[in-house]
Length: 41
Image 1 (spheres, rainbow, N blue to C red):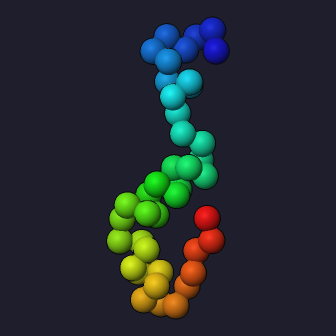
Image 2: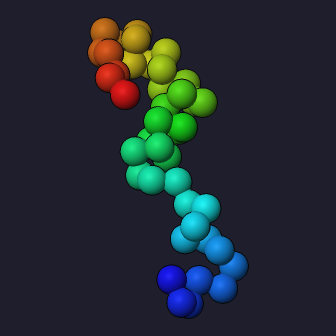
């Protein structure tokens, strides 16, 4: 964008990538497995 002074818009992750990143790098994986849920990414 014209007003993207520091390049943030070019380096931002998509929402789905952010969610995947958070899910894989926190305790959410084990917590979901503990209650019997499976996440399809």
